Structure formats: structure tokens, C-alpha cells
View 1: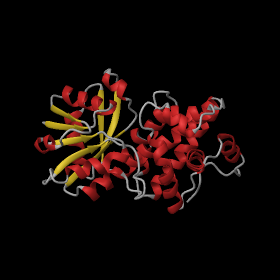
View 2 (view 1 turned 90 degrees about the vertical axis):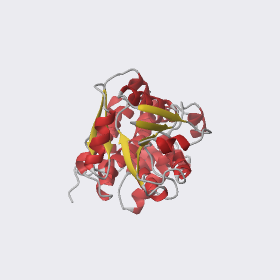
View 3 (view 1 turned 135 degrees about the horizontal axis):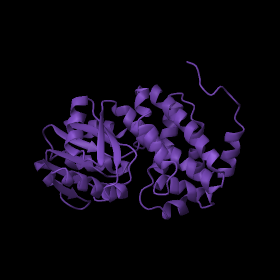
View 4 (view 1 turned 120 degrees about the vertical axis):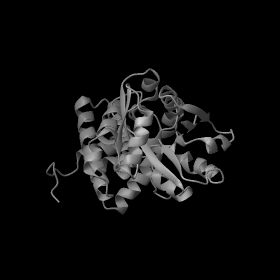
Length: 302
């Protein structure tokens, strides 16, 4: 097939490498280039940050006139609208079939051919399966799903939780604290997903638990490293300035916290990250607040 990869960053290049290795003809687009070659492709992989998804899709409106498959890799929620990435695609380019690729994966590992497993979601499982088979390699396994909302939620919210774990490590709170944050963060993630209609099992898979485990403990994660810098005493501006690219969790936390409030979901760790990143609260203040919360049963009934 002819496949266009929209985005020439590390992840776009890694997925272009995957597509070529799977035997496809690949065209990589980057900002400033014309979008016309997309018209000749059988599908596109959209590998730009969440904040750029609407802009790029808007550029395709006059080019893509028939049904067209777009695989979205951004892990985030649109500011202002509160839309997830597949919902942005439906709003801007309704003739497109939007799929979502997520899971525990670093571009550098994929480029090196290290074993990686991700999940690809579409509204129709057969469509996800078709693309999973077309792009999978022995060392890059793609599992299919029809729970688009669950896969989106897992990818977006784990970035926020990774910031919390980075802050904890930056303050030197230890491995036990990070394990507790990861576990309680996962509980918040599953509560949020259930409220928004996702399938609980999806969050126990690659896009939820899998991605959470990876990003909450690795310095390769921009979100964890951003949190680490905050925990070590750097300001938000300083931590962003030293980041190796876009820190999706820093952009996502405000709208994630707003959605949690709107839907009545208790997410104290997300609240804490929001207070630090968006409201200027100190990590010490938020750590003390979390540690002073009333003790409750671990598993909530109903």
C-alpha cells in the first residue's frame, strides 16, 4: 500500500520505518510541505502532538474527499473542547475512518528493532485487524481493539500520572511511593474510563496498564522526566524548556481534571498534578495533601 506518515518527529520516523519494513511505500510529510501526496495514499498515519491534530486534519479537508483511513498516534485531549483525538477527526474530517494507535512504546526502541507491542483501535474490529495485520512485524506486534474510547483514555491519562511518578522520584520518595502512585493512579484511570463508557478490560491492556508501567518509571518518557525535574525543584517553565520535545501530559492535565470534575470522578493524583503544573502549587503542598486524605477501603463498591 501507499501510506503517508504525517509528522517527521521521532515517532513519525519510527512508524515510517515500521511501514517500510512491512513492505509498504511510504511518504513522510513534515510541516511546511504540501499535503497533496496524501491524496494518492490508501491511508495515513498521523504522528503529530495532540495540539496539532486539528490543524493537520483541517489541511486535509480539501484533499481527502472520499472515505480514508487515518491512524492517529497522539495521546491527549483537545484543550477547550475536551474532545479525544478520534472525536476531533470526526468533527473535522467526517469522511475519514479514524483509528487510534497506543501502547507502551518508545520511538528509539522501535527504530532499533527491539520487541514492542501496541494496540490499534477502530470502531469496527475488522478494520483494526486489517491494519494491524498490514503493519505488524515480528518485533512490532499490533493487537486489534474496537474500544476506541478506552484506548484513547489510557494513552492520554497515563501521561499525567507519569508526571506524578516523576515528581515523587525527584523528591526522593522511593520505589515504594512510586509503586503506590502507579497503582492508585491506575485506579483513577479505570474509574474515569468506566464513567466515560470504556470497557474495563481495555485499561488492563497495553494502552492502559502497559503504557502506565512504562512511562511511570523510565527517563525515556518525556512526561516522567518533566515530573522528575519538577520534583528536583525546577519551575514548570524550566522543566518544559529542558524537555526533549512535547510533554503531552503537561498539556493534558488541565482538561483531564476538568473532565473528571464534569463527570464526578474522584482523581486526587490528577488534581495534584494539575495544582502543580497549572496553579503553581509546590510539590510539597500536594504531597502533604495526598498523604492526609482520609483512609478508605481500597476497592470501592458500586
